[in-house]
Image (cartoon, rainbow, N blue to C red; front, side, top):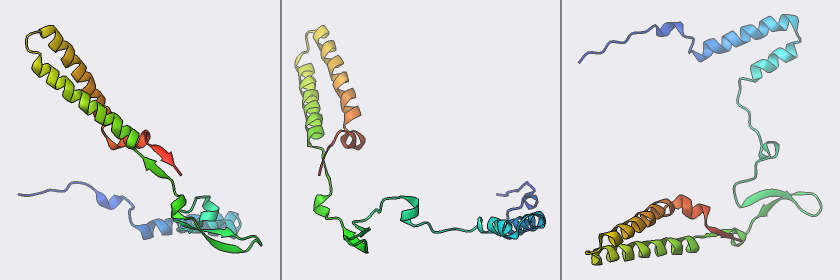
Length: 151
């Protein structure tokens, strides 16, 4: 098996060092007409920067967080895990169980009703509706959306 590579990959500036040099040259050109402090800021824009949670406004993700005591001094506060909220899916699970029971009852009725085709078609229609509803509700997404939250 042979492979041929076509393309002119050398013409694209993908080297990081070359891009940095190009940026520095642009900065030098702007230094001539502007303040050197503004130009040096453009170089620093290319670097990564740490942003603390206080500046970003993000809520801490753990049980420990930084806070202040009564006198205004910094203090590490602990959020008690017993006060964390819980999710209860019992109501949703009961609803799904009822649908499964209804599905089994309809299947048994269809098997037992062999003479009347009209009644069988009605039961099959109801069974299809129940199966469709089960397909929509018997998943984790539905359980999470309809769960009850308690603290």
